[in-house]
Length: 377
Ligand code: PMP
Image (cartoon, rainbow, N blue to C red; front, side):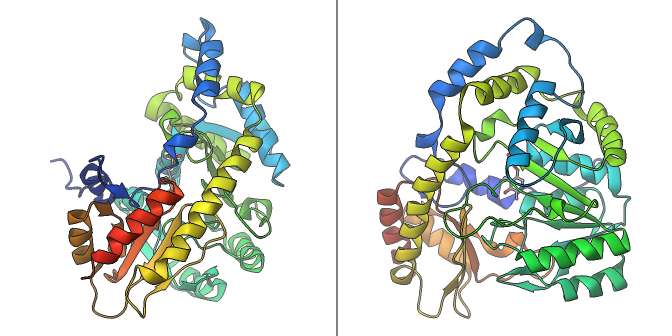
């Protein structure tokens, strides 16, 4: 008997918002107008050699690993290329970690709310997901210590920088406390970091992986390059990386060699950090436009996060409003967002919603927020 699985509300919603007249704040999609199409085309042209068409090692293209490692070192995370595994998006890295570390019934501790597709991966593995209390600065280390005592989690899953769905960032002090806790209790921590480079203000925060050897750091080209490349990477301690490579072999032998070679060729010929700076300049303006429009858009008494980077603003509506009802009215006005309930591991808060500000231009954001303001009437 195949097991029963439910579909992802976000992916279902993306299908509904595909109509061109809809202004969608739903998916965490990078801006299509900012993809470096010419740079990518040239990189694929250079990459398409006979060698790039052959089977290759599961760990990934050595040139690409070395270039990714170089970028991680530049961001303050010492990383030899051998500590990296190239994955088919960071979503695959999550699946590999789940397969390598979780027995059915194992406990995974998460921030609540958190990334929906990570929750799906944990549930598919038969894990028990336990939320850890937190606030606008991320999970609370004291609450985590209690969960560790009581539930003995195998794994803690975090998006510590510009979280999906809240946009929150875990403070350096809390990172240090969590790293110490992980070391003390032999807890594995997944630091899922697809948004970390997209900072629009404030100081860089050191990666959790720079503070403990128990941290698996996941990176991705999806938000800084293009998501359809499906390229990500996983930095893990050597002994665990060996297991993850075997799991990767069982999953797909290796990530597309053509795509890996193209990414390596792109990094050789282009300054990706300069491209990221251009993204940050544009996304920072889009963030500001959405934050500025919110008071005139949502009902009095609403609260929202004020992210320093990333893609998302998280809104909590005043008592009694159900974001799912608002979505129906919003779709009738050709604007979309994601109701927040599905990001909760345990008790959903129906009065929450996630808005993405990266996909649309400032003008489209202003128009979309005007339409959304009508959804309450
Ligand atoms: N983790 C988080 C927190 C995400 O938001 C996403 C994408 N929405 C992913 C992982 C998956 O990214 P990728 O495209 O690299 O598989």
